[in-house]
Amino acid sequence: MKRHLRLLLLYFAQYTKVRLAYKADFFIAFFSSMAATVLGFGFVLVLFSKIPKLQDWSFYEVLFLYGFSLVPLGFFNVISWNLYEFGDLYIIQGRFDRILLRPVDTLFQILFEKFRLESLQEVLTGTLVVAISARRLGLPWPAADYLWFALMVACGAVIYVSVFLILTSVSFWFEDRVGIVPPVFNMLTFGRYPLTIYNVFIQFLLSWIIPFGFASFYPTTHFLRRGAFTAHVHLIPLVATGFFLLALFVWNRGVRNYSSTGS
Image (cartoon, rainbow, N blue to C red; front, side):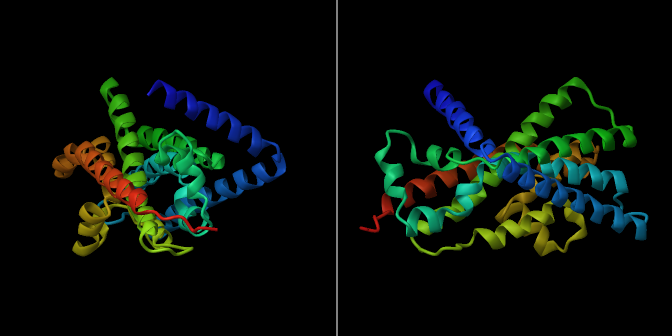
C-alpha cells in the first residue's frame, strides 16, 4: 500500500508537470470544463423558471442533488481518461503489452497513468453548490454528517469506477475502438435529478443494474432528511463494495484473456 501510494503521488506530480508544460492548452480545457458545468446549472435554473417544483422537489433540493452529484463524478473524471479510451489505445494498438511488462498492478497503471486535471473544478464547484443549497434550505449539519459526506463521495466515486471498469473490461473479449462506455456515460445525467421523476423501469435500472442512483441520488436523501429512502442509504457502502469486487473480478478475468496484437 505504501509503495502504491508513493507511486500514485509520483504519477500525479509527473503528469501535472507534463500537462502544465502547455499552459494555454490546460486553461482552455479548464474553462471549457467549467463552461459545461455552468451550462448544466443553467438548465436547472431555466427549468425552475417554468415550474415551481419538480414533483415534490424544490429548486434548492434539486440544486443540492445536482451539486453533490458533481463531487464523486469529478473525482471519477480525473482518473477515467484511460477507461474511456482503453479499447482503442491499449487493446487495438497493443499498448497493454507495455503495462504487463511493468512490476506494478495493471489496473493501478491504467487508472493513474493519466489525469483529467480540469475535472477537479467539478469537485470544487459541486461542494460550493452543496454548501450554498444546504444553507438556503436551513439543513442541520452535525459533525457526523461531514464524515458521512466524505464516505458518500468516496462510495459514489467507487461506484462510477466500478461500473465503467466492468464496461471497459469487455474490450478484452470484443475489440472495438469506441466500446460500450460512451452510451452508458451519457446516462450519468439521469443521476443528477431525483429518481422519483422517472418511471419504474428507469428507477430500477439506475438502482440495481447500473447503480448511478446510489452514487448521487440516494446519498443526498440523507442530508435532505427524506426518510423514505433510509434503507437505500444504508445499502450504499455495500453496493459500492459489491460492484467494486465484481469489477475487479471481471478485470482480472479480462487480463488473463488478453492476447497481444503481435505487431
